[in-house]
Image (cartoon, rainbow, N blue to C red):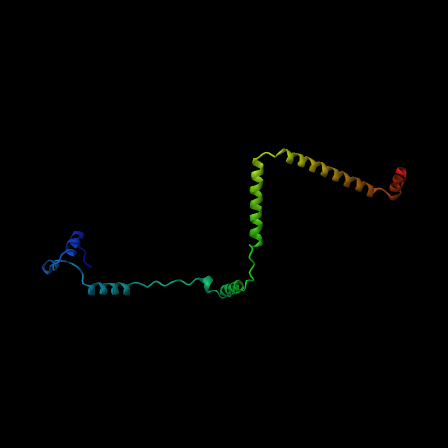
Amino acid sequence: MRLYHSSQVSQNMGLKNKKDRHHCWMITPHQVIENQQQQEDDLIQPRKLINPVLASVQHRALHQELLFCYRRGTLPRRKPELQRVLEHKKREQLRKREQALCPPSDLEVKLHRRQQRMQFLEMEEKRRMERQKNLPEFVRVRQTLKHI
């Protein structure tokens, strides 16, 4: 293939008469086709590689089953359980971070104190019931008779 200067090309492309055209060093189309064929014969032609996942019989069967279920409408519309749990945990962490940044209101403080007091009373009641269970029956009966 012959190279020529760009100024020559631009000059030659604009020429209109025959006597100026014979100075043009352009390659004939026949020579270009022969060069391309010769280069193609020398090179190894690339082929598309086989995707092992798509070639798998199991994968194709699973894909067909999913398509079939999707068309019938039997696929669950909601997210998988693991994904839902992870998103819930992320939301909870974000909410806790936001709550940690702002101070609790007076109502929240009072509710928290009341909750602690109720838990304390429940624990005391459980302890008292356990002590009552551990006592022999005649002692429990005697205590109830004292009250009467």
